[in-house]
Each structure stands twice: as structure tokens, then as C-alpha cells.
Length: 141
Image (cartoon, rainbow, N blue to C red; front, side, top):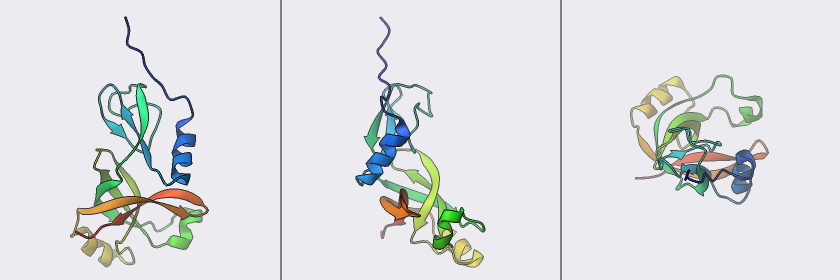
């Protein structure tokens, strides 16, 4: 008898942004291989299974490197210059995101900051450009 696959009933993006509105940061965990995917999508990025469940992530991770954008998206220009870095979550996935607590004002500051990495970070939901977004903040060791 084939195993029953439980797919997500509500669109992933809606569930993700509804979670952010409640201060929760959601990813998907694969019921087949056990791997996490973040940001959440409809299938596991590791094994392509659709047998996934939406779960809250720890928000803990480490920033591996960062830079800034010369031309940030128009809605994020008021926050420029800001650090935009590669964060690896405790759960495994890595992705590019805004990181607070890193100096992104000059190329020299960015070079010096990258020499101190990796650093621990913690996710938070922040209101930016009129919407809820996931931002990471460097945590003191």
C-alpha cells in the first residue's frame, strides 16, 4: 500500500506571512528525509518530496559573510546602507537576508567585518517598508 502524503492545504506564502504577522517564523520540514527548507516552499529542496509540514524555526543561526547593495530595491532604500549576508540556520538551510549589527557603511568596514565571521545571529520579525520581514541580528557571544 503506498504511503499517504500530507501536502499543505493553504498556500505556503499565505501561511508564512500570516505567521510573521503573529511573530512566528515558519519553515518546512520534510516528513520523508527530515531536512528543513527556508524560506518555505511547497516541496523539500533536498529530496523534492511534497510530504512536508510547516513548522516554526528556532531563529538561531550564523552569518557566514556579508556585503551591501549599491542599488537596493526601491522600498528598502531608506534603510541603506544595510548588511545583506548569507545566514545558515541551526536547522540547516542557508539564504541571503538583511543582518543587523554589522557595519556596511564602507568597503573597508565590510572587509574588516567579514574577517570576524562567522558570528551567531537570531531571527526576528521586523516591520520594513510597510511589511513584516525576517531580519537577523548579531547576538553577543
